[in-house]
Length: 84
Image (cartoon, rainbow, N blue to C red; front, top):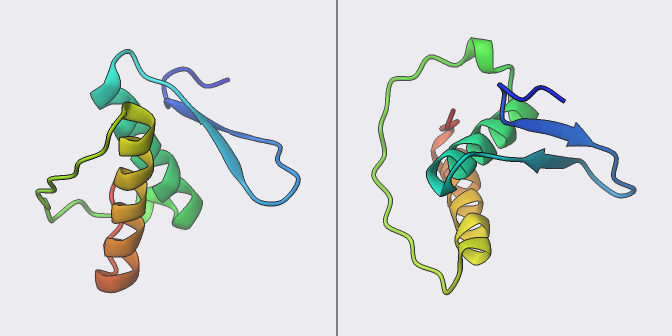
């Protein structure tokens, strides 16, 4: 397990799965975004140039994480953005 990276790929029967961790909720969300980006592209080829403010709501932290990743995926599909 690579503790510094904040995520690792884990076996899954149907798709790809990641185990994600962080010392607090913001770090967990950032590591989840990095993990999803890692699945989509080689992160070393991404040049961070755009900051996109988002305001999302959900009834608990788990739902907010799902909403967060869904929004990042939507922005990737719509605008070609990859969030690292």
